Image (cartoon, one colour):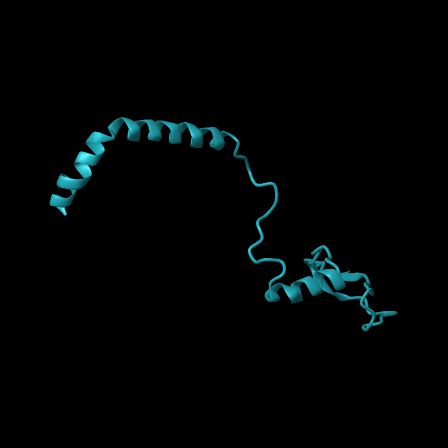
Length: 103
């Protein structure tokens, strides 16, 4: 390997050193010019192509059923509560909220 670099590569580099230096300078300026035009991404990159078969269920869910905001389920925490006033209660009504009995 040392013999190859000594007999083949070294004479080539020595003979064309100004061409190599000029090309390197040109390449540095060329890439530097386009590097100044780079900026942050304007949109998220697709991890998978939108037409890929794996994306069909996701497209179906978002297009047919719509995206909804993830508001979550409200949770109320009361300290010092001995129970809930169950008068006029309907346990099967999801919107039913009655007053707590404070301890």
